[in-house]
Amino acid sequence: MNSQNNHEVIVSGIHLELTPSLKTFVREKAERLFRHEERIVRVRVELECDRSAAIGMQFKAKGHIEIHGPDMNAVVQTDDCHKAISMLVDKLDRMLQRRHQLHRVKRNHPHAVELNSTLPKVVT
Image (cartoon, rainbow, N blue to C red; front, side, top):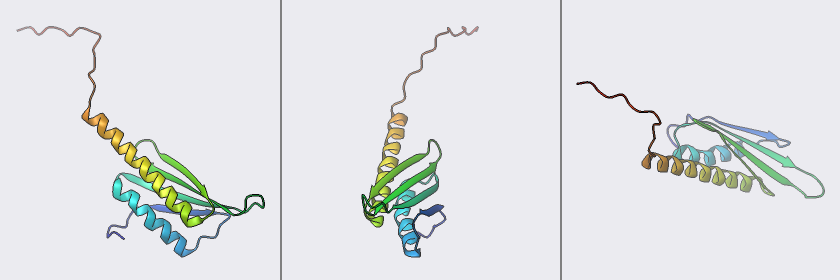
């Protein structure tokens, strides 16, 4: 892990007991998000287990990134908990990359602003 491990990652489980190894796995995967964007305030990951008889064991991973600007949310559902976490982090990573790309395009291609009123003339 990085030497500056001061990022806030909140991991919670719904109908699922969180083991220390599962928490560590989530934190290690979430470090990739902080490496791409330093202005992330907090990452919250919720892991949910659905044990209905009709579909078998399903795991749902919900991710919420609090960042300067609009927050980002993503949900992934699969039959393996570790796979759901990996897919969630991949999805959040793609969202961060797209956000960064849109900001870069906006920064490099400013648009002209038209003024409707006339400007006063300078008296010399």
